[in-house]
Image (cartoon, rainbow over all chains, first blue to last red; front, side, top):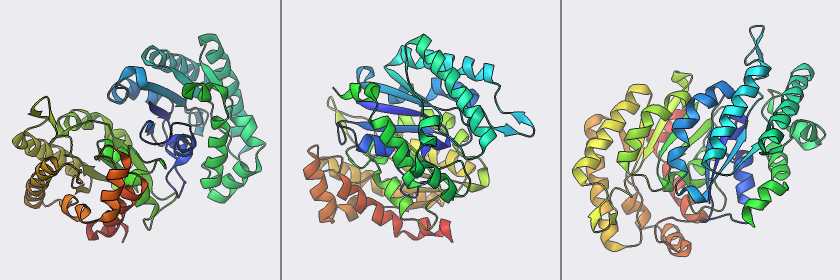
Length: 196
Length: 196
């Protein structure tokens, strides 16, 4: 099986001194770890859903061969909800359109799951992420695509919050935070079903 | 700093149950490990220099921002020297042209290093990799691009060879092999010079 993880800096694991991020820890803990499972990490720093929509059509195909062994995990949204120069980087309505477009194209290629955006330390910013996460959950439910909420659950986890504080930017966790993130996905029924 | 590793299954770390490969271990052992160093792994299974040449122009730019913090490490060639259906996947002359093209485009973008293809267990196949590695070394010397030979040095390392045997395919090492690979690059002057 080959799993492509698509997202932003949180997907690529920025701030993790062990260079695993949550996808690396998740795959290492999976029942298929080793030669039978290849991990492709397509997270890119500072990207919003608009950037992802633009590059996925080019980057996915070479990594999904053979097609029947391919899987996709999408995870983005924190950068969409960011305020920069007084404006939200991507308005909520466009984020929803982009998720629909990206998830439609991904599911047409192979089985796909969506992992929601995690929390940040700033309260107002985190509220926008929660709102985005709720809307994403609704879109995925309508599309019949598995969605795992991460913002509220990780906000209740001391290890994740401590990791955000320790990293210094309140946005990227360190090794412990990524481990807590991975553990939640690893326990998800929809993820485990890929290895039955 | 952001470092993009470009290559094949050996670059993405196929067979490593820890999902680090040599690029992950190399970055984790670097003086800049953590928030200051982002790793992008663009290795794709079974790709030859022909495949890499075709996709690099699309995949590099989003990952090289800001440009003055970007670095590229190229590592490919084992698949070029593979015999499939009685034919070499990429003839030596074309491999050389492809390396020249890829390295020219990479160095025009940011500082670039080339890590040579590692050995496999099969003797005849390994001889073709050695030949390719020698020619690649010459091309890089002419271009003024740093090149690290890996095939002969790793062939003398018990940890690498044992790892190739243990993996079962004689081609991809396991965790110990990737660690031996990473250690050689970590000790390379040209690599260390990026962190001075």
